[in-house]
Length: 207
Ligand code: SF4
Image 1: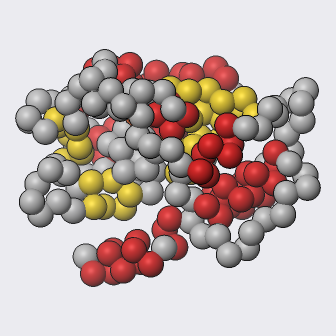
Image 2: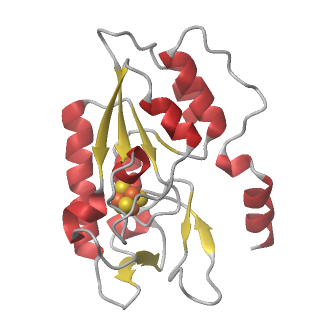
C-alpha cells in the first residue's frame, strides 16, 4: 500500500483520540542539528504543530547516539536498509565509523514508535538517519556529491517494521493528513510528493 493509500484509510483524529505521529525533532524546532541548530522552518510542518488533535512524539536519533553538536555523517555503499542488513556503513565526514551507533539509534526510535503506537512518521528528508525519499550517496561534502533514492537508517528501521514514513516535502501526502485532522479541510489536488517533483524525476533519470 502506498503512503497516500494508507493516509486515505487512516482514521480521523478527535480531541479524545488524537492521531499519533513520530517527528524528527529538528522539524519540530528542537535545536538538535549537527551544528546545534534546527534545520529551518517548514510551513508544511508548522501547520501540523498547530493541531490540538495531533500528538507529536519528537525524537532525534543522532542526538541520542552521538550528542549535539556532532560531526556530519552519511551512508557509504548503499542506503539505510543496506546498513541494517550489514551491507553499507555510516561514516562521519572525517571517516569515523558510526554504523553501530546509528543502528542503536534506529532501534531506540523503533521502540518509541511501538511504545507510543504511532500511526505515521514525518521525518526530515536527506538525513542519513531520518531521510525517507532521498539521501546522499556517500560524503555530502565531496565535490562530486550525489544523491540516491532511499531511506536513512532510522527511517528504514521504521519502514522495515511496517510503519509509514513521509517527509516534510511530501506535500500531497501531507494534504491528506491535514484532512484527517480537520474534517472541513479541502485537499489541494495540485500538490505533489517529493518523488513527483521535476528535480527528482530529472535528477534520477539522468543517473
Ligand atoms: S538525526 Fe533526524 S531529527 Fe536529528 S537533526 Fe538529523 S534529521 Fe533532525
